[in-house]
Image (cartoon, rainbow, N blue to C red; front, side):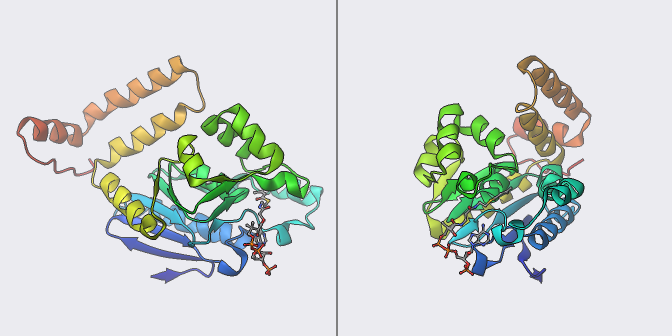
Length: 259
Ligand SMILES: CC(C)=CC(=O)SCCNC(=O)CCNC(=O)[C@H](O)C(C)(C)COP(=O)(O)OP(=O)(O)OC[C@H]1O[C@@H](n2cnc3c(N)ncnc32)[C@H](O)[C@@H]1OP(=O)(O)O
């Protein structure tokens, strides 16, 4: 297991696992942690042995948001000059492989936003999601007003963002913020199992499926369907399409070569 300092990184089979590891601050997302997270994500994305990535925290906290102690004295000229939040926080969006957020405990502020930047959220029964920035005299700054609204709808997002109310795992599942809820002690195993399933499939089609679903958030239906069709047709240039369909017809398991 490699140790960066504020995160722990390991592979389980074909799944890269990144664990936020700053327990004394409930995994508050300071600059150093975000730098390490970005490096680890890009390293797994470049590793052919890895087919999916799981991002998790501790049982008490996925992440309690940006580090308020680090953030409190920042000035406007400095955050503007550095484009703080900007690229550093959005590295996860550049990852081509599926990223699964396995959330136990608090996912607040930037923690909730980081989870929402991932492709799939699995929640432990004790998970709590929220955007409490309003209590600090600010608003969400890493996409929370946009992604939470797209996930749960305007009324619930407004209520959460305007009051700072947290949502528990059951409500998050009902509201479509998370894919499913699992017993807290089984969270990582379930996330890795999901990652393994994805990693066993054809990497080009997995990457294109991820890209197409993400485009649904950013374009019109007509453009999104056109985009999907272009990707779909391009997969007929892959060996894996021939293999997947031959395997179905021959009633055997496909042997994908990611080619
Ligand atoms: C991304 C952008 C642009 C913005 C943001 O994310 S703003 C931050 C949004 N998040 C929050 O406002 C949550 C802040 N934390 C809390 O409200 C509470 O810590 C809690 C409800 C998550 C947990 O409460 P609990 O009583 O169980 O634990 P604490 O004693 O409060 O915390 C333990 C330990 O962790 C430190 N901590 C917690 N969150 C942060 C944070 N976001 N930044 C820095 N430090 C944090 C907390 O101060 C305490 O440490 P000390 O014992 O050393 O004080």
